[in-house]
Image (cartoon, rainbow, N blue to C red):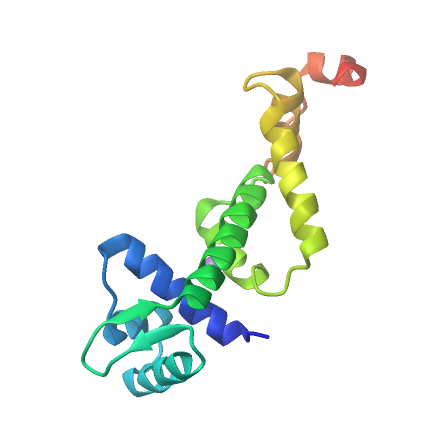
Length: 156
Ligand code: MN
């Protein structure tokens, strides 16, 4: 079992590796807004638990289990961002909220979200169904629905 904290660290390491090809304790401290000593201590624990290799003043690298978990969290994060954006959530909030949801979501809910996102993506861009969906979830006062959308609701 992993804790939320472990998952946050592994996700940050994965993101940093992807962005710049290497990762140091300082980068993680900056990204997670955690003090350097706390980060060093946690990195030692992650090393002892077999998720990463960490040498003080040296680099940080994934072990297979650490990489697998980081990829799993990233996959959930990306799915949640996509879902939230479909619902009309801004990029910034979608990114933030995905990081909260990604830890505790059940496999069943993930499965349903995947099917939902796939379903919405199947609707052709510009089709009535997609336009109506976007309209319905738009934040704030969107004004009256376009007349033909109301009339032809049954055809959605
Ligand atoms: Mn995240």
